[in-house]
Length: 312
Image 1 (cartoon, one colour):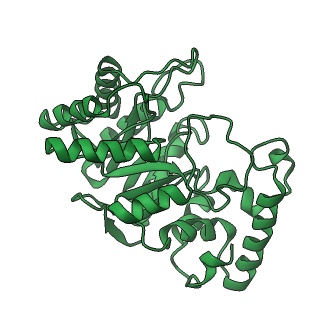
Image 2 (cartoon, helix red, strand yellow; image 1 turned 90 degrees about the vertical axis):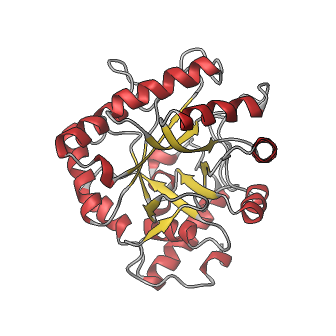
Image 3 (cartoon, helix red, strand yellow; image 1 turned 45 degrees about the horizontal axis):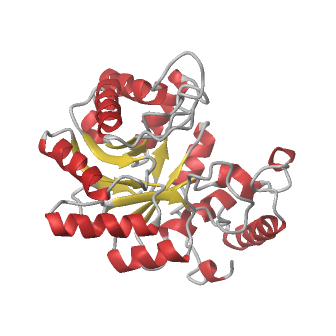
């Protein structure tokens, strides 16, 4: 697997990022750690997690970060990975916004403690609060950088106008500024029903124009659409955001492209993002079995037709 440098940073990362939202749940801790070993053996080094991951399950907070921290400590391999984590997600119980200096500090310090590391390579605001001046949020990140707690920072699920405001504020104050934007990027964006969480952002022409103009890297989330493209008629998608005629039609086209190229639908989803014209896009994926993981990591073993992106 090739390595790329995230634009505007010195972070050398694998072309795909292994998402850990379900770590400790599916798969369990032992299997999750083994899959991380497999990912590393295949050339992967980029991991995505968040302070809120697993907080929806009673019994333990920060489960994903805690298991990752245990993994790094047991293997002694922290420096072989680039870690992205996120803070300032809204409160899952009350839905109250949590984008304040106190929330930022609490989540960042908790992430450092759970991950058992002294610095985070890439730290993102998991959500936004448009009532708060963006310059103050950037200042929080700059102070964390000066303290050595984070190396670079960015946003997740921010609107284009707020990203532009952040760029302007960073330029005016000589701040480092956002280096990454994370949002939903699977091939059916714009064709599905609305997402169940309206605080999340989905790739569209406005984002594409912004990223082409600025060169800022994109971290894709939900990159495999939960397996929808491999089996669009599965009963488990009934009544979900994927229960859309337009999305199913696209899935049929992807299945046809799969037969033509020998790439699986999941691999096509990956290449749809990594090969996106004029934009550095790094898809984040999840895998609960070694078979799934190896399939995704083999997405670059076959050629991807240059015109494939325009068939959709």
